[in-house]
Amino acid sequence: MLPQKSTKQAINDPATLIRQQLKADLVVAMRARQRVAVATLRATLSAIDQAEAVEVDPHFVPVSGITRDVARKLLTEADIAAILQREMDDLTAAIADYQRLTNEKKIAELQEAQEVLHKYLVREEE
Image 1 (tube, rainbow, N blue to C red):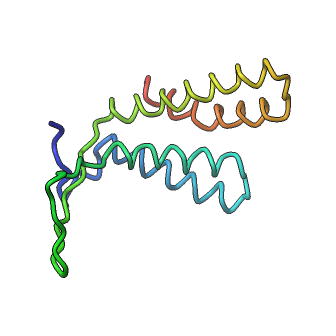
Image 2 (image 1 turned 60 degrees about the vertical axis):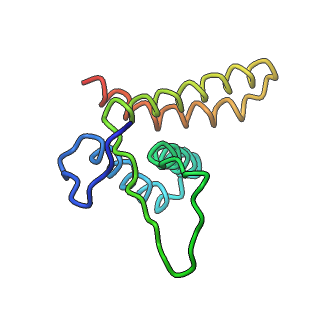
């Protein structure tokens, strides 16, 4: 079982720094109206959020007025790198599909999305 996030998670935690950089870059891309970068960064942040979700006990019965908040999973730098790589692999597979269909416009868009993610993968390797 993965450790849970504490409310005082270290600010210098590499996983937290990557997430903060993704969010900061999302704001910049939104202001610059970079449609592909915005979509790519949102999808990547969503994938990270999904990976942090804890499984819900199927026997849990919600009670009106009582909150049963659960701390999210704490992802490591390696976990986030794996998510980034999975997103990159999905883009590569989509490019191959569109190459078979000879859809150059969509290929260029997907390659642009790869460029957005590539800088985070390079940072992970350093």
